[in-house]
Image 1 (cartoon, rainbow, N blue to C red):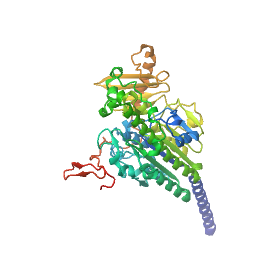
Image 2 (cartoon, rainbow, N blue to C red):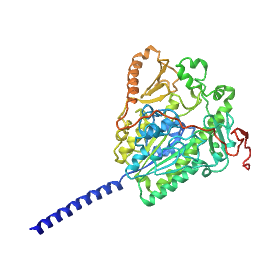
Image 3 (spheres, rainbow, N blue to C red):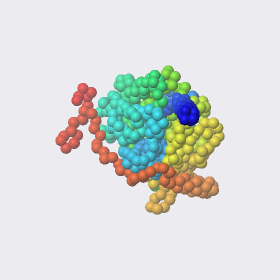
Image 4 (cartoon, helix red, strand yellow):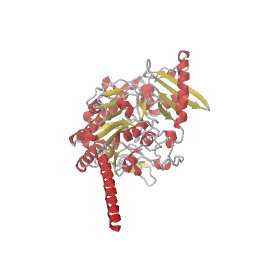
Length: 523
């Protein structure tokens, strides 16, 4: 009797072990079938690319990626400044939720309990690797360091450091020894592999080789430092362009134009005082030289993206890897009389966004549906079969991959200081709060893609304007709601900064620069 009971218990135990092993084996099979992710992020890249309609810019590799996947033509950032934007898309939340609206704010000092995108992949057994700039760096002063990175996002980090940083003293700049915050440029000697982004591409190629041999699932994030200022690229990329044929827009550079928009909007496109000289037609040659440098640097970044994607295909990893390409915000190149970012105009908020890989339709362009960079996080979770954390408020784009006519929201929301802007299919509405009063901008993209005609006071558009105001106010309110499971929210603290040091300059004991390096052979 006891033996019979014993054998029955033994059979039951073996049965349960078999069931458990089967479930574990099934989970293993599912794990092995999960897709990898290659996340490619440019710095300060606008939509001046061949695949986005700029026939002058040479960008064959990004263009080819678009042909192999789905391109979003109406994608916008949530804050047009490096640090806040990157914190936003890496957490899937708006700036009013991350509480990061400045550069040099560590993610864990404001929202310490959230699960970042790379952290979520780590939780699911992926190897999460960062090469270059994903969270904020002071570019170029922090090149070679981890900047304001988040160590909890990654298993491994790689900080490339190239000739562009070593030979910083050679760079042309509107303000001596200032590079990141002002327009600066250089047609550099040497080859791609000597530049910081070239080194980053080489490091990415080595990582892909490793993953192809080990079969380890990966989230590989490669952040380029260009075309952010200084616009540095090898000379061959400058030779791709005819400087004299480069167009400089002067519409929107006059004082009369500034009177047609709210004061806060005018301030956003005139706060870079040393760049206002480029609005003078007498300085057109200088403006063309600078814009040529931006385009050359864009082509250089495109070439590095091409090297990485070529390796992805050579290893066969392209068959089970989702590729995402984007930028942290757009960039003005003279439009509205402004250079660089930090505005609520299309030039600053709109970015390239391309998805490619298994399950994503090829050669599809979705130009109407408004999407946001915070949608990247939930989309990648959806595509890889991983549950999205509750704090993520972005929306998955997977339904759009299956049906391009689907819309996931009525417009893309962007904040800048005391202003909010929403881009719909055909309109942009912007709301500024000034001394507890509101001022507005309204642009009709069907007739004014350059956003130069403010229609907020035009009675013909009063019905559309009132409707958009309601929608914008609703979006603003929702962007301020505390997400579920976000944990603690703490007022931001900026990391204290020291002055940039250019290698080879000499300083006295009090930190005052007393000598400027001029020659490559100097210390």
